[in-house]
Amino acid sequence: MHLVEGSVQPKNFGTIPDAMWWAIVTLSTIGYGDVVPVTPAGKIVAAATGMTGLIMVALPIGIIATAFAEEVHRRAFVVTWGMVARVPVFSGLSAVEIADIMELLRAEQVEADGVVVRRGEAAHSMYFVAAGEVEIALEGERIRLGAGHFFGEIAVLRRARRSATVTALTRTSLLVLDAHDLHALMARQPQIAERIREVARKRLEGRQSGKGDLLTEELEGAEAVE
Image (cartoon, rainbow, N blue to C red):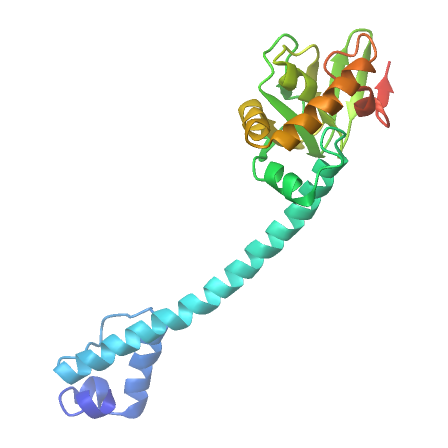
């Protein structure tokens, strides 16, 4: 730039340090605009410098952002995978089948004292507790479920109404699988559908009376509150 613009704009490009200053602000994409080329050759150099600056900034930002996204996804993947794999309805499924289910999950945050589902509502989703704690109000007792527990899948499979109210005791992170996604998954994957129906039948046969749409296995390890 000093060579092509120095003789035309000695005040702005008359010295190499002046031209270097212009190059720095252009490459960093700041571009104050107080110094601009006026010759055709200078404009060509400026265009090439500007494009180079964009590439220099965009590439490292893209690399860093991708690395962060992959790390977050990897951590979330491990947590979600473990939670799905431990659910009795999905236990025994292959890695590909569990991955298929994970793509359908969505996250939901519930503040303390927030109601997740109410007794008598239509069952639209099943829930996995990722973090926090919820309380299920059953007839005659209350059950607390923490991270790793789940609820609501039998009501979804049976297209029944909720038989218990579930409230968040603390700020709770939930993973939600909507009913239509669950049924769509079963429709396109007969093997998964048969597995879910088989396990659901067994759970229904062994379900304790008065437990609503909660399975006996869901209550194991939970803290009963008088």
